[in-house]
Length: 339
Image (cartoon, rainbow, N blue to C red; front, side, top):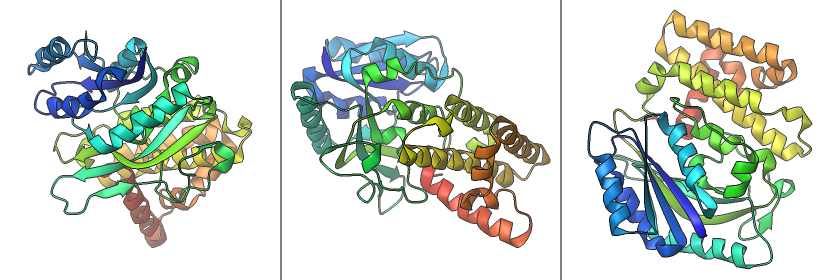
């Protein structure tokens, strides 16, 4: 059994996937690198995956499947994982070597010690192309450092601060026990990956290291603003999936409940902002339908989202509405790092 399984979803990723894989190889035999070729046809992604499997037997494993999208690739990685812990690293991203060593040391303590955790949280860095200063998403003011803690020890998150897929390493069996299965042929499912398991998480640990390097800069990248506007239907689909995944009123811990409501709020804001930025009547109707969907699904949650600080700006007319919309857009930029 491996200490850590790392799934790398790859779709026509030949240009950059080797940099990602090479950054993970120093983990050695304790790590399992699952290179998921998600039906790539435009380049030699599959051949690169096979080559790494040949050159690093027992560490790298190539998985080939018909194209199913990012979610299907993560599902395939999770199904094949033999590691005690599970991490997703996108093929155009990479990890910091020194932080990687610290993470493996920490995970090893949990495996061989008397206590374990359900989720390990680290910082990530926005590697925005052309930016002189790299923005770091850290959690020093809200999470206890270097100790096991529960949701009762978590302080309120600041506006625009969220635990994203880049931040987390989950216990593999927890993901399986909660029945996590991401939708196929859908972008932005990383939000489901990090959100849906949260009520099952009991024990956490925050390691204050800048581990994950989140690359932003390709014109075809899923977080490019114009690309996101073109995929607004998928953003809305993911948001609805998250709205339906849990009855937040039944969660016993109010800090967890508050955090998950805030996460839904930013998802609603992003969908709304994309509709507003598109400038089309069709997308404005989609925004209206989404808010109506929430109101029908859960009236109490609708009131929380509609009259929260960010939610107001998505629905108020006139100058005050525009000002709040701009504030919401800046928070959304911080969340996704729009390029």
